[in-house]
View 1 (tube, rainbow, N blue to C red):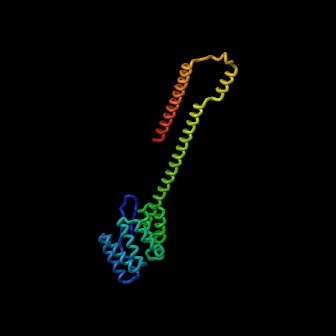
View 2 (cartoon, rainbow, N blue to C red):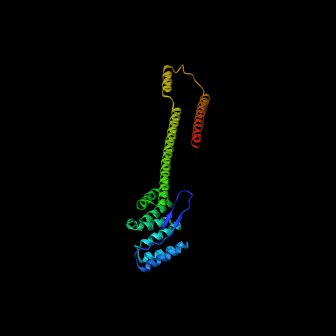
View 3 (cartoon, one colour):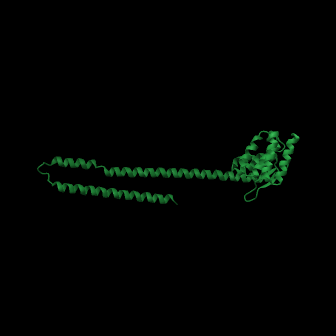
Length: 249
C-alpha cells in the first residue's frame, strides 16, 4: 500500500494493495478481511482485523504495514508511527522496504517531522529510484524542512532582540533611578560652602528670623522639591510611553 502526500494543495492518494507474507492461514484470513474492509473505507473495522492478525502473529509485517495505513486514514498519525516503529528493524530487508519507507515519510509529514520525512523518502528512493511520487514528496519535504529551520532562526533572532530591548529598558530605568537619587541627595559641595560661610560669620552677624518665617521657608523648600520630583516623574513617563510605541509596531 502506498500513501501519497504530494505537493501543496494536491490531495492525498492511497493505493490499497495486499501484502501477505508467509504466515499461518488464519493470520492471512484476518489480513485479507482487513483489506476488504479497507477497500470499502471501513477503516475502523479494518483496524480490528489487522489487530487480530497481529495477536496470532506479532511479527506479521503485512498486518503491521496495513494496520499503520488504516490508522493513517483515520488521522491517528501517532499510532500509525508507533506501529511502523515496531517493524523498523525488519522493514529494511523486506521486499516491500521501499513502500514501507514511503509510508513512513507520509506519516512523518502529517506529524510535521520534516527531517524524518526527508530521511524516509530518501530511503524509499534508494530502493526504488524510479518512484516519481517519492521524488516529489522528497523535494516537498526538504522545502518544508528548510522553511521550518528559517522560521526557527527568525524566532531566535526575535527573542534575542526582545531580550536586548528588555535589557536596554532595565538600564534606562536604572539610569533614571540613579539620576533621581542624585537629585534627591544634598550636594556635598554646597554643604561645605554653607558651613564655611557660617564659620566665618560671628553669631552677632547672623540674621535672626522668627519661628513662623523659618517654617514658611521650610514649606517653600519642600514645595519646590515636590515640584522637581513631579517634573522628573512626568519626563520618565513620557520616555517610557515613547519606547512602548516604538516596540508596538
